[in-house]
Amino acid sequence: MVNWIIEQYGSQVIQVVIHNISGEAARSELETLADPLRKMVVDQTQAKQWISDALFSSSFPSPKVGVAEKRIWLQQVMNLRGGKKTNQVVKEFWMACRGTDFAYTS
Image (cartoon, rainbow, N blue to C red; front, side):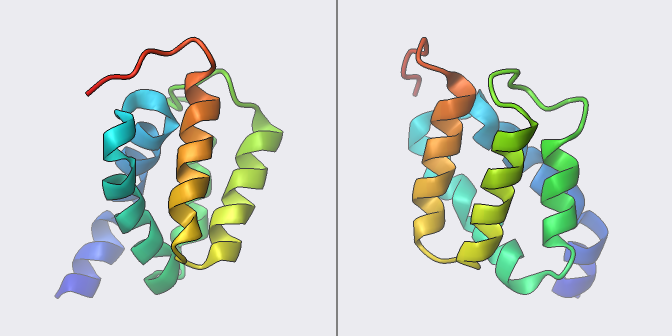
């Protein structure tokens, strides 16, 4: 049952997670957001495609990262295969998406 739900709605979950990681979430929320990302990378064969679709969609919220940065980040996430270092990569991408002129939000 859970696998069926993930297969049906996994791309939408990833879309929301990537949208938030891309600068919309508060820094304190990043580890919570990284958790489903890590689990999807480990458990779902479609994860790379879902993440790629979210990163390169027209609704991607941050103009501060380009195609090259998105590709590199996607490759890093996939290479880490759900490891703990994914949290650090998520934080770095969030900072790149926010840019240097952001204020911490809670």
